[in-house]
Length: 539
Ligand code: FAD
Ligand code: NAP
Image 1 (cartoon, helix red, strand yellow):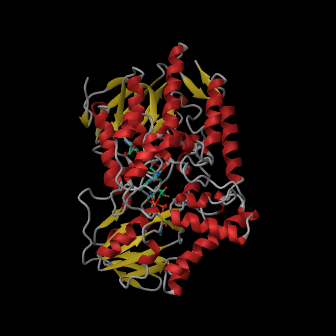
Image 2 (cartoon, protein in one colour):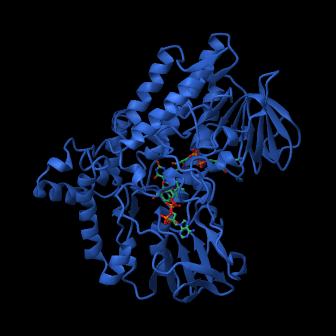
Image 3 (cartoon, helix red, strand yellow):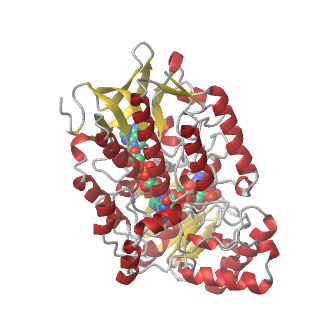
């Protein structure tokens, strides 16, 4: 029965239910179709796009270059699509994903405006029943959770929040019609990537902007601009070459500006300065690939930190404001931001920085935000407070596996997976870019493609071997969780309170969730298959 469009009236049966219609869900659907499987995507939003459907705040754009932050699975697609900027803005990325949906005729198998509320395994039949809000259910042999690592908005429960009488916005749930801040006094809470992108533009429009900062952030310039047609043509002349180079990079991007194979600890002051200046001038995230020990050795990291803080102090005129903007944690420990005029915005006369470490928020009031030092009168508040990352979207679904065990219970002490792809006791339920895989530490489009292609092959191999079910082995999972923790422990990532650790959400278990290092991870995934799905139980 056809149930395309908004809402679902009747239950249906398919081979694969895919939850989410972002980069991951769209590609998964395409691969399922190519394999001859019936599939249905269920998406809470009213259209495709995922991240790029929801995050419509001013300045939203990718910070991995568009030529690299795009699908590589279809050469005709990557040849025909023309990116206009080095880092495309949200509208352009959304148009790209809409184009993909149309090009591969994907929408007819997507149910929009429906939220998956539960996924329950029937052990007798080996099938999953997926329940939807506003109603209905779909049963399937396989479920693929393409629910996104950064799709569940984190809105802090601030005292008095409901009393504020003006409009409030979260960057990840931005109104489709846009927001006009002209003439308004606006408060932005947060200084992560979303804030860093939106603050310069809100400051230009608003009468006054007050930024409420809990932790200062590091940022490097994007130097965004129109994409040189000659550069685009050169990439397209050997697109496969760039994709392959990226897959060989530690974070699956930046193949054209690879990591320097030298330790900062061994470099002279002149070498350090020259390389950091070169990378600052190039712009973007490859700054952190200036030396090969920046996220391993605190002494090395300090050299990069000092350089960036030097830039901050050149840009920001008022030394007191510069002091407040100066982070003291390891650079790269929280995700590095990429900006277009962020620090310079604090030189504007209509911008105030409030340091919440000095003067915490006491309460929201009907007219603004009261800190321990002052009342800040505001017409509108923007929560740039991020996401319940990596596990948030899944934890909002009542997933029950063998013996009726809730996923939340299996993950009570932090997420446990094998390869970030499956969790023991939840057979035939796959995660795309799940915890325990490179996911958010990589160019996510490469990470997504690798997972979708692995899952697709796994489904094909099951069928070819006359089998119906696959589950992660408990021992293999335990060993994998230890491995992920071991890798994290060898880096500087666990040294600060980042969302990688779940530290931004009060009460969330603190476990470092992603796995650093794309190429070694892919190698393990391939070896597991070559060894007959080692660590999985197939029957
Ligand atoms: P998403 O795009 O998050 O899609 C998941 C979808 O699942 C959503 O549409 C959601 O509505 C749906 N969903 C979730 N739960 C349910 C449910 N229960 N029922 C129904 N539907 C559900 N990564 C990079 O590598 N480079 C970048 O430059 C970059 N820039 C980013 C900029 C922003 C502003 C943000 C927020 C993230 C950025 N990311 C970036 C990360 C980005 O999330 C990924 O690159 C990618 O878009 C994720 O695709 P996805 O399909 O896995 O998940
Ligand atoms: P984020 O990085 O988690 O930043 C959230 C900000 O809000 C932090 O400064 C945080 O402070 C602050 N905050 C959270 N709760 C608070 C509270 N109760 N009181 C005061 N401040 C609070 O979220 P994000 O900026 O949305 O970015 C999330 C991720 O999405 C990024 O790291 C990146 O992976 C991706 N992203 C990428 C881009 C891009 O440039 N392409 C843009 C946006 C997002 P603390 O640091 O103290 O927790």
